[in-house]
Amino acid sequence: MTPKTTTNDILIVIRRLPTIPALVPGRNEEANINRYLLAIVDQNYPSNKITIIVVDNGSTDGTLEQKQLFPDGHNRPLCKLIFEPT
Image 1 (spheres, one colour):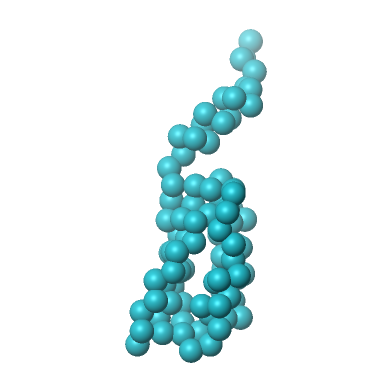
Image 2 (image 1 turned 180 degrees about the vertical axis):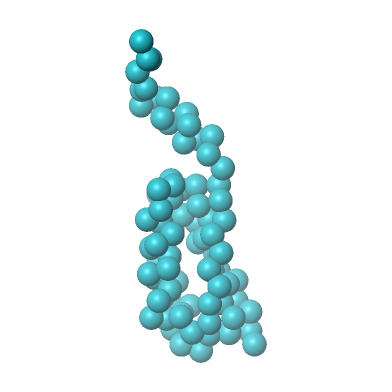
């Protein structure tokens, strides 16, 4: 007989998963950046095990402000911003 998987077993597996980086390069992506970030979070991987790194290459639109609207927090990925002026 196969042993029953418990909630505790699942939590142990999740804790052992590595934290992965997701790189999001962009320039003037105000209209799309939140969609990109949400697509990463919607993956079948625990969002608190994802670090999103947004690399902005000198945007002149509201890309930076849109990233600010994407909240970090409990069960949300850590979201860092790297700004490269052109």
